[in-house]
Amino acid sequence: MDTSKSHEIIVNETTPLVPAKGWKKPKTPLPKLQIGILITLQLAEPIASTSIFPYINQLISELGITGGNDAAVGYYAGIIESLFFVAQALTVLKWSRLSDRIGRKPVLVIGLSGACISILCFGLSTTFWSLVISRCMCGFLNGNVGVMKTMMGELTDSTNMAQAFALVPIVWSLGGFIGPLMGGTLARPQDHWPALFSGPFWRNYPYFLPCAVAAFLLVLAIVMMLMFLDETLSTKRRPNFTPTTVDVSSSPDGESLAQKSMGNMSLRSLLTPSVVIPIANFAMVAFLDVSFRVLLPLFFSTPTYLGGLGFDPATIGSWMALFGIIDGVFQALCLARIVDWIGPKRLFCVSVTCYAPLMAMFPIISWILRARGEVDHAITFALLCLLVMVVIWHTTYGTISLFITASAPTNDVLGAINGLGQTFAAMARAVGPAMATSLFAASKEHNLLGGNAVFFILIMLVGGLRWLASQLPDEIQDRDE
Image (cartoon, rainbow, N blue to C red; front, side, top):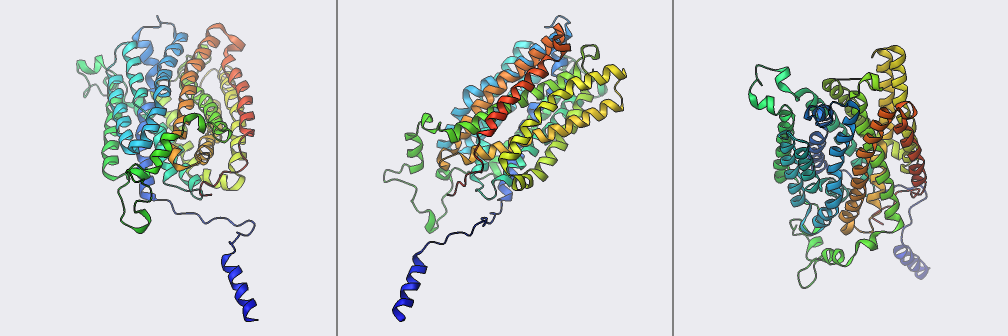
């Protein structure tokens, strides 16, 4: 009896415990301080990038390059908005891979500094080519988005990743609230506050004030990052003298094993279906979303006789600010709960499908305006319906980020994979504004499908994204396993 009992104890001690069916791993608490600093840093960029939207079309008109043709403004606005992403697509992967070697913080310093300098140059631009150069400079020096997503992935695990990434949309949405509001309010200050801004400088550079405020916010972000943000790359962290961290990551010659593995792993070896499919979905989402983002202010600013709403920059900024804040609050409060409720893949597929009625709202609003003859409560209600669809559509970003982060085979290549994702997204965003605004201009100029051809084309492209969404894995892979 004693022997059998002893044998039974040995079997129980050496047999691995198998979690019961339906058992869920308990959630790890988020590192709130570091996550808070990281999302605060992210806030500076969307403020700077979206602050130009309310006045970019008016700026193009004032430069005189369209010859007074209002319908052609979209061509030049689209070129300027696309050039940033062209430049970013050429360099973002290099910045992400560099961050895998030298650390995340040095790359962020370069990116934020580049954004600061470029936005100041944009505000001082008085020709079309100076606008082009400043936007290209910002794109070449900016690898921040991929690096920040990598840091978010390194600060979380499979249990709290959705909760952390749910905060990212509110940052960009809050930036989408503050940026357009700031750009629309502070543009041409000599018209609003002539007593304070009556000098020749403000007459020569009427759009410098919103750019200067955006640059100041970027400087504050750099100072905050240098003072409070911890490095997340394991090979560049300050060593903690505990038994779990003593030299286990280094080889005898002093080179870290993580660095060796990165050096031996080519980009081609990362291009597996589990990585490519989420990145392809992300690129398609980026293309369709940036097309919507540039069409919205263009639709707002286009004269009513061409099928737009004829809003001034301040009204455009107010509406875009409302869209941004409501969208962001919803993502922060509800995204993680909805992901837990219906699953990331199902939510992504539902959100993708919502893009078709989102595009259909543009010609519907134009029809309502023609029928009513003025912007009234019916137009306001239609714009609020548009807002609801935008909120649902934008859950795509949070969910696809989960799939991309989970696709990394090891944390050592997380930066490279996020860099790949941002590269293809930047390429899509480079094509999107130029294509969407050019199609919008051509649709209005040649009255294609009643001036609405651009919206029908984008609706057809949603079918391709819906098929890509069906190829995603049914569940998020647990990186800890």
